[in-house]
Amino acid sequence: MVKTYSIKFDGKVLNRGFWLYVIDIRSCQGQHLYVGRTGDSSSANAGSPFARIGHHLDFRPNAKGNALARNLREAGIDPSQCEFEMIAIGPVFPEEQEFSAHRPVRDRVAALEKGLTVEFRRRGYCVLGNHSASLEADQQEMEKILNLIEAKLSRASSAEPSLPADAKERRG
Image (cartoon, rainbow, N blue to C red; front, side):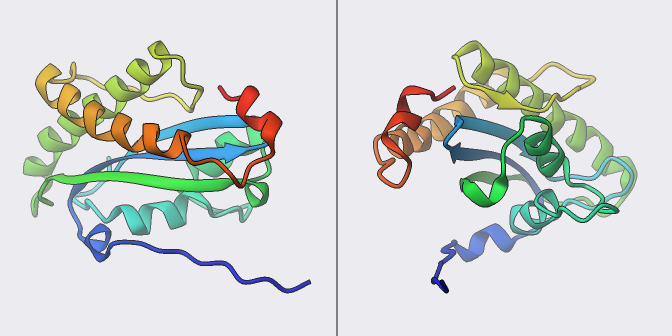
């Protein structure tokens, strides 16, 4: 049977720069989070979160940059049976033109990415993937970003009508 689906987004997520994002994944296996960032490790590119999610969900065997797809596979989660919401924060910093300027900003954002992952796990969320960082996250930046994300996650948790009733009991 043919059905219709929709994707709604704010055009601001098309802007390039250093972004943080949390992808809230809901399935019959419960809720999982994926924490990520934009800002390449090997070049001075810092793309948009909209472009990033497309790479994340590329399931071709030779796909690159698809960490979310790999983590879903490893967790035994069928992405076609999930609902996804990307919560994007940013741009936290603008894209840099030179790699020498890009690297320190990328490292700050990577520290926030890792800090968010650790904090969400501490708060009881099931977070897919692992992140490393050479720096510690700035605690003021972390708190500000955590508050923004938690507000969105709280609203999403109170509005889960499309999942089976028992999925709410198996969250986490």
